[in-house]
Length: 334
Ligand code: DGY
Image 1 (cartoon, protein in one colour):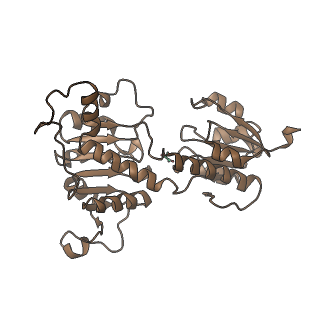
Image 2 (cartoon, helix red, strand yellow; image 1 turned 60 degrees about the horizontal axis):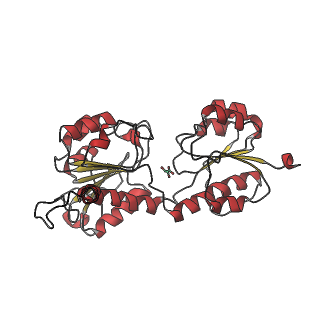
Image 3 (tube, rainbow, N blue to C red; image 1 turned 120 degrees about the horizontal axis):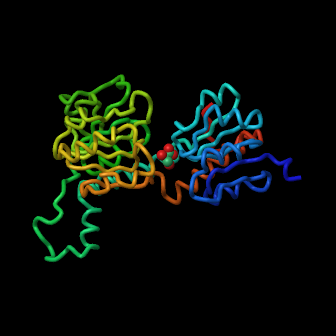
């Protein structure tokens, strides 16, 4: 009898908050392991599914949609990014695509600031120093001296929702905020417009200027064909030797080999990364050996509150389509 219920494939465990609202109206096929489903498992499990709740690690392309056939009505990703889904192909077939909207904005901005302070003030390095019993002489005038954050210049690449949330935090630290975007705003302020740019107004500049003038560069634009390897060796060479780069967006926006080269050549002071060209970060990455680099395992949205909310939204997206209802907090792309 249960086969009469719509079938939902969930490719990895999700927080209870979402499962609770999914209820008992569905036949749920869930991968209970934290290890993502392999492509071959996905190809088997997608057959007959009416909805799939997937993650950044699952590539949902034409081949998968062909296998799913007409049964598949909704692809709901437990993420705000959706570059792993062929949305155009889905639209052609009338398959809806759901994502988690801007629910993770503030949480991700918090983490960006955490990374910025961690790398600038050498927090992770200092923690390791104490744990490794290297702290021998108490207070020392030269111990773990880093860089100020207050009154420094932050350059935000991509002034979307997360960029704005980072800017709001930066103003709290009395920082000067520069930003660049794919398209220039209709009203721009030049660095000569001193009065206009003070008072908590971010200043739009070209990417080149942002890179050469900032003490902290935060990458928070989305990944697309224009932003792929936007930060390469040439850009890194433009940075001040005392400056840091932080990436909370997508690894492929920075050419990782170029970054490693720039760090080795001490062209920049350090980097703080939540995302990488390939995830997980490869076992022998030179980044792991560098003290002036903070490396996190893609945890930008990883607060209990936000992950619970993401779970609810991802499930509501599914239910909205499968039940033909208009539930609140749903985000459909097509
Ligand atoms: C997203 O949702 O796109 C994040 O990168 C993961 O939370």
